[in-house]
Length: 136
Ligand code: FES
Ligand code: FES
Image (cartoon, rainbow, N blue to C red; front, side, top):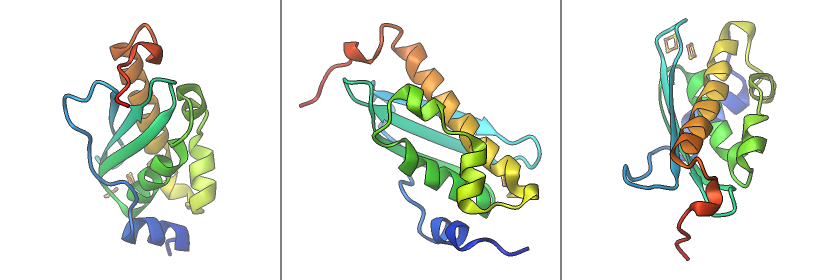
């Protein structure tokens, strides 16, 4: 089974690999694992005072499709509100990357990671993003 060009591109040149400082209050972290294969994905979002995701980073221990899926969603969530980020579906990811059926769970991992990151951010900021301290 051949990987699509887009998977190979994200796999060879992953966007936004890394993590934010552990004490960054404006960050939400989602850590998810895939029961089907044991792969692990950590996705972090950094949210500004307007409630918009201004940056995202990931670390994925997993297959090429999981790395490509997480790389892609770090690009997609930038500039989106939290609700808009939650609207990203694994089917959008698998379509964009032309994932074969056996690799669909890798894109589900990325959708789950976004949802977990948003939930973590909201749990840390129950009053909403407007209470965040603006840096500029
Ligand atoms: Fe081995 Fe995903 S199944 S890396
Ligand atoms: Fe399990 Fe890709 S995340 S094979």
